[in-house]
Image (tube, rainbow, N blue to C red; front, side):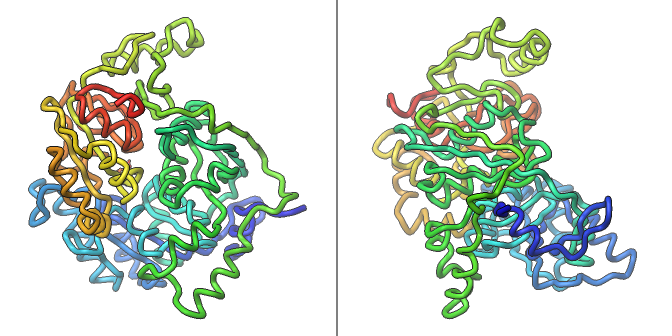
Length: 463
Ligand SMILES: CC(C)[C@H](C(=O)O)[C@@H](O)C(=O)O
Ligand code: SF4
């Protein structure tokens, strides 16, 4: 029987299989950020252990970094986390991309764009959206802080092998529909726990035709349906994206790496524990209405009416709508928005800024809207400037901010006030996610851009 892509990478990293226990898996790359690493470093310090392979670890602060200036962090808790990361990296000899330096950004944006994440790797980080890196053809998983300590100390992790699922998407995406919409659509079909216990591989012609950055967006959201990992077989798109990037293999090493990477696909006779197929033509620009990313609709649909919801789910459904201040059956188009956020590890890449700019070019931001446009890294910010996108944004009344997780998570000054409605390109719309009492609807950069221009939830196809 053939092997799946996941099996091929997994098998190549098994150090030992413990009978009736987890697998000891070798890890190629550990990323660390300021929020989930301090205790892991404390553990090493307490036990007098050194970092086993410091050159395999890359750290950077991203959650607490402000997006308006990066000279200082006013919040003492956030400041301490960022300072502690810097001190730990200095003490343990780990590469550290400091706040405000050209290498810094959100880990899940920086890793792929610097080719620190490569096909065939095992990649972990104390962060659930580590699934993002699976888009380059890697096993990339979020882990807990105690596991971060394990990897620092041994470059290995104890892991039970998940089941495998293949999600195929076939055909051409309709106009105005992006990778983000594909992810939101799949999640609505599968629910936010539909892939729990599985490692997902995305396949099919829609995925093959998707840009590398679109694939990163899709893999990013894998965790939101419960999957720990979201892999995509590396192909010419992957190789073209990685080639020449800072940490990519060079010269002959590149050639030999690519020939190995070309073996990384699921064999024709590989069997998945579960397989589902969706049609691209069924997907449209989407928007969420609830407080989990699976509670979403096509932008021109209405929120389900109460009759459409199973009886046992009605209480939860009404609870979500109550928080969101929406009604069953309500149409969301034309609902006034207060905040617009372009950014996060979901949609903070150059293609997202190009998409946003393509909508707002020659138009003006609505007066009722506060807009935060936050590149996912300093490299993305530089690309925006080099391509003159900053000028287009400025002329339309927007301001380009500094790289950060920003308004994705209320751990820095970019908080949405209680009761305000935010339309956001991030990946989570949980209660209080963008600030206590803040209400979040998730959408693509095109939908957020159209809404930032009109001041109401707007279908970009109709602008
Ligand atoms: C702070 C961190 C642990 C968290 C995560 O694991 O994902 C954050 O990045 C998030 O997006 O909620
Ligand atoms: S941008 Fe958001 S989802 Fe991504 S790592 Fe930061 S807080 Fe988590």
